[in-house]
Every structure is written in C-alpha cells, then in structure tokens.
Image (cartoon, rainbow, N blue to C red):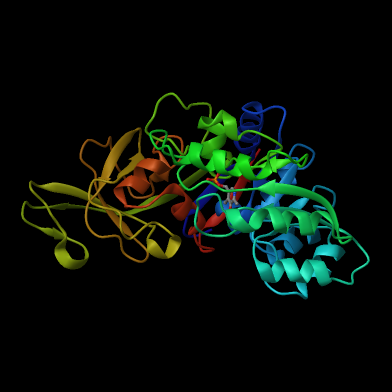
Length: 359
Ligand SMILES: *Cc1c(COP(=O)(O)O)cnc(C)c1O
C-alpha cells in the first residue's frame, strides 16, 4: 500500500468491551449495536468476531441485516432498530429470520395484515420522551394489546429510547423510565431501554435487552468523567508524515491562512484529510501523536492532508507514523476539538482508509 492511511481495529478490545457491557447488567441480554457498518468498524468483521458471544445484533435497516446473514451470521438474532421501511421487506424479515421494531402506524398495519406463514418477533417502541420514533403514551396500550392478540406476532418486547442518558445531571431519564413503567408495568413482556449511557449510569434502565453501541468501540458516553473506565479503544486511525518544512514567524499555513506561525515553526504534513473522514471542523490545537509526543493541528484540514506544528516532537522525519486517534489520542478529544461526537467521526471514516484487523 502506497498511502499508509490505516484504521487498525483491535477485535479483542471489542470483545472485551462487549463483555464489560454485559457485566454491567449480567442478567440482561446485550444487543450489540452494529448499525452503520458497526460505527465504521466493519459490521461483518465485528459480528464474526462476536459470534458465540453476542446475544443479538442491532442494525438500522434490512440491507445491513442481510449483509450479515450473507456473511455467515446465521443464528444470532438480528434486530432491525427502525423496523421495515416498506411492506415488501417483511418477506426478508421472514427469509432471514430477523427481529424488528414496530414504531409507527404503517408498520403496525403491515404486520397485522401480513399473510406470511411465519410469526414475527417484535419490539414495540414507545416514545417516552425522546420525541422521535415510537408510539405516544396515549396510544401505546392499545397498540400493545393489538400486537399481543395478533396471530402474526410471536414474542413481543416493549422498548423505549432515552434522549439524555449521557447527562447524569438531567432528570429526563428518570422521567422517561417512570412514564415507560406506567405504561408497561402490569405486563409480563421483556423490556429494552438502555443504550450505552443508560447501561453505564442508570441502573433502573437495566432489564431484558440492553442495547450498547458506542461503548463497544471503546468510546465512553461520559468521556470526561473519570468514574466510567473499563473501556478500551478499538480503532486506531493512523497515517504518515509526507513533508516537513521550517517556516519563519509570520508565515501562513494552509487554506485561508488560518494558522499564522507565531515563531519559527516546524510544520509536518500528514497524509489524512476530510476525504478520509478526518473532520474538517477540527480546530487548531487538535492533538495528534507521533514519536512518543503530542503535536497539534495547525491550519485548516484539507481533502487529503493536514498540517501539524511539530514543536517538541523528537527527531521528526518523513515517513514517521502519526496516530490521529487511538490509545494515545482519545477520539473524544478529537471530537471535542471538532464540535462533534465520536459517533460521527467513527461512522464517517471513508472507504479510502484501509481497514486492518488485529486479534
Ligand atoms: C444506535 C442505538 C443504540 C446505541 O446507542 P449508543 O449510544 O451508541 O450506545 C441503542 N438503541 C437504539 C434504538 C439505537 O438506535
């Protein structure tokens, strides 16, 4: 490979993170959320490595589920987190033995009217305050009753999703839990509430099926709170130095002359840019790691390159390996410098970046 821009994915770290997620609520089943190509980590490889360990997988659409089934993920249940988008997909649900969320009136009708021979395993989604998908409080009981009585429905699980579980100061999560419990309390069905943040911080949300996503990839929903440890970064994004030059004080670096050298400055160019998924919104000062030290972004991110101030870096040379995030640079710090979240950076790493797997 000529251009050494690599996302190296540590599958053992991934499995450890899954087991850690599981240990936080050992009595629950943990649905490993691997939508959006496993947050950019490669859903097929991730699922293959978790086979026999994961209780279930969660994906966003039937295309993602079918890709897994076609890659030999044949037994572990796969849940469609947004259900189906059109009625004809119910055939795929049956053919590939998928579980699905029902979260709107159209899906409800499709399921009830289905003439397919097989029953569906359904998670009915209740909107307890997220304000996005799911049935509202006043309609939920009727929907649950209808599904319970449909000959097309096999097991029915009751589900909701939190808007603010990553904010331990907010009362919204408890409000949502109360609202959900008021609707479902008298019923025997399994529940599914917790995303990563709720699994880590809200014990009352642990039941039935948990749904850890971001934590599997080693990024915490509470990145700047020390009490939540135990996660190991899975992806290391790296590339190499392709130019080093010394500039005089006052020189400008890159597009728009955003960075002006305050002193004589050694600037390295690294072969990674926004076309690789490195965020263009990254500000000056965003950390990168090379030769045992931290260098800082200096100037606007280009399509194929970034420029970094090499001050303090030992003996920098063309060809040196640079870590953009991984064990030495937290993705959450890069995300903070880029006004975004780790989820977005992970899921936008493009196909130009060569993915390599270690286990
Ligand atoms: C993506 C998703 C999750 C996982 O959320 P994380 O914050 O990544 O843990 C859980 N539940 C639903 C319904 C989702 O869509």
